Length: 111
Length: 114
Image 1: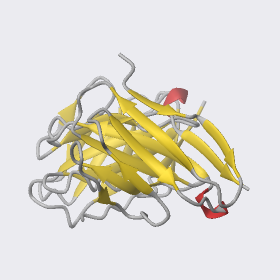
Image 2: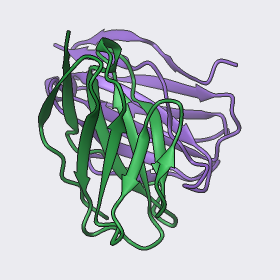
Image 3: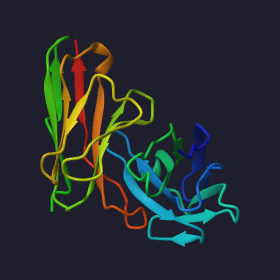
Image 4: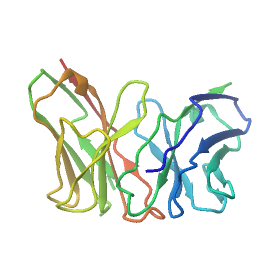
């Protein structure tokens, strides 16, 4: 199973962009890179996912390195509501059942 | 559309007691998962299921059993609860393929074993 490495914590000021890195150097060629976030006292929620190309949605952008060994979740303008733990996880068949989370990155947003 | 529903949301057990957590999803997802989350830690996969009638072990399966008799339900059982099983338990479900397979999580079940 592919392992991921994320910084334990990061800080950002409100209204500023945030770049959350994830290293997944052992990812297989068919694994998608998923990002989730967990707000305090809630279950994780989906943020974004991609395979090779950069992806954008209403919540964030995902930049994937050309060699796919790392990716970066980009929050374009951090708000106080973005304070959460962010997880990146590789997901791919046939091991999609073994979706394991690391400890993630705790993002603190300062007003 | 309820999504993923977990019951109960809170439970206190004494050491040695048994209980079952129920996870129900109404999205017709093939995959279902049970995770536990200890304070300040990430989620650890206990067991998962790739379809009705199938189950498989995750990272930390010891002390737990699961069943998937119906596609929409995934049960997590503790036969003899231990204080080390005090945790928040999350259920999740997803479609089969990762391209459309975002994980949908329940709100969690907080279990305390005394």
